[in-house]
Image (cartoon, rainbow over all chains, first blue to last red; front, side, top):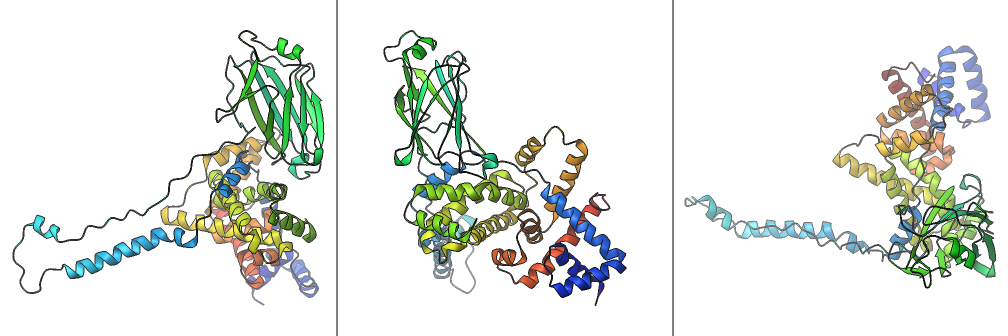
Length: 280
Length: 187
């Protein structure tokens, strides 16, 4: 058996992908061959080093981009092949035209360069590509809204799934409610309802935080029930008949107390959804 | 995840249950993102690949023959989509390791991780980047994904014997590159 064959076997041995018979042979060989023993140790170290590579985090909007993509009608095969087909047709036309319009054989009369160009076919290679539709807005979704000074009320929601996003059995919704001056708002009740009639409430603590266990990952509706005390506490208070409205990124204005539809929670280990309430 | 669970999710998704789609996504997307990041070395492209994979998969769930094999079916789509990106990139030029990805990874270091470890990580990343993509795929699927030879063979559409040989060559190539980078081997 060649040395490379042994090393190949050692590599498979390292992965536990050998038969019992091969295992016995490799182990006997390893006891005798320092080079193969070193290769095995190196393979193991390489594996450890690769597994230790730090991992990045996908962006929070990935799921919404997928939903967006799914909402667009799928292009049939002929459509996807259209650019290729149109290029082929244009090329064919160019070849045929070039053949038909070629100058007569025999000694060609002297022509100015401009004249020569006049019988050459012009080829337009532009294929019809549809323009992408405008992005659709998602009610309740306002990822990474910048904090704007002067906004009277801000709700920061952070939905955290169970550890590392692996166990989605008991996701939690936690968040902080602020007023426009950045002060946390206590005593605001949030009514959160999910599918199958599930409903839970959370009241913000003195530091504006709230926390609620959700039965499962999914889509939830959140109703902000601002108590009069909370409304009074929120600054600024002038110019308010119905004091607050919620403005989503697409410009949709919702009043406090409006039902918000939050997108599926617990996407990944940590999901942040920021919503902003503005004075009307 | 068991075959039964995979089957249940696929069946529910086929019925149009949005939660099933979300569950499938939740279960796989972070893992897929990591895998493609290591294959492409570019976080933005990796996200695009994951996005395309799920769109393709969700659109063709109805045509999936065996709902119990969701796992390998998704991986095949992911791998094919990744290879498409690599091919189109090759037509343009091989891009360097994405800076954003580096930054994201740098943030993943806890303060306890010292400079030495970072240095080692960077060397391994650089060595992986220098590897031919086909070898990189074998190494990543085995070491990062922990797939068996049979699963790798299924994902890449190669015979198991090829997987065995390719993994050995990939490892040797990685050692060689590390030596060229000034390391005798991984410390």
